[in-house]
Length: 131
Image (cartoon, rainbow, N blue to C red):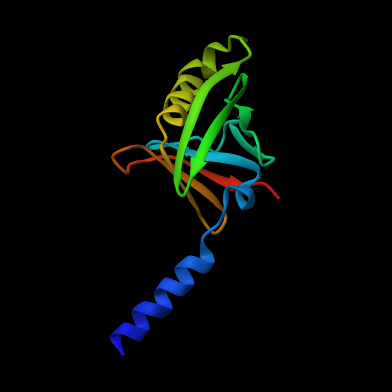
């Protein structure tokens, strides 16, 4: 009985796994580290076309873009480029977001979006998919 229950759990876990293509779309970032940033205009867009994986969005003030590699649940975000507007009141938030984004090494899809984690397994970013 115990083996059957474990087998069923493995099947459901496998079926619920999403590919990076399933994660394509636009996300609203709500949490960065321990900070609730839901009130700020921070977005995360994932685009894959089979050859290039792009990540882009708005980091509270500026637009950013870059490429990423993905295998299983591991993600490696390459160097980011961005616009250079200076928004004094958003500068700290923007730097906090980009620092957390670039140190993220694992992605986990959730029911309503996705979560990113650093090497130690600490949540770096939580985002909700925009419908």
